[in-house]
Length: 303
Image 1: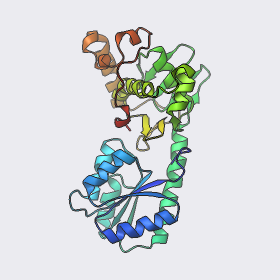
Image 2: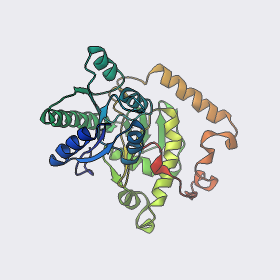
Image 3: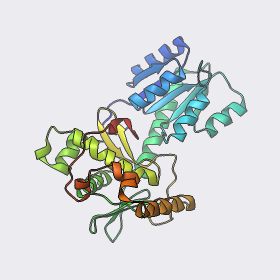
Image 4: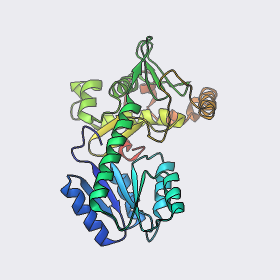
């Protein structure tokens, strides 16, 4: 949940209509917005479409088990809080569900009041964790850090997991603005005004284009940091499942450092037309002209 979201959005995935209706009514009474799905496939589609703040997930669904849904979400880097709703109450089921990335486990039948209290408690904890994890820090040399991403506003340098990242001037200004407001959802209008200026008023597609450019360059080096809030805007934040030490206290894990260095060497050694980011900004933009290519579909990626 963020400043831009008036009511937390909860997705209920359960194949029992009476459970969906009961929980939906209770949530709306407590000022939540609600979506519901009766199958795992429909639920996953709604996750991609609605980006809920929390999921109530039945374990025994007709097509995909709730455990597998949670596992898919975590493997995809989606760390939305998940509370299982299930009649399976053995200790082994509880251990399995939580070990796969679930945050809480409620057995049927359950008290609606207790469920609402658990939802509020989990969202409060999640909000505190996101705030702590996404606060940008700045050292005495002017280097701004969010997780393993570093940006030096004095030298216009950017590094991710220790690997230098080449950005055009506009890409750099966009990233700097987002890092300076880490954890907040920034609307397209805010980004246009503060990165491009009033001359670009009404041309929100340019925001999607440049967010897509940044994702292409940053995402291969680690977990996705730029997230989309559908219909609102973008934020830069750390996935809750990723554990990062406070800035300067610990280097990234060795596997991540090796992967970053290898990818950095690959980019330096490969011909320009073969580089992974060659399909990003056109050559004029790479040279500093910042001429965007045709708008992409950034809203549908890495959200």
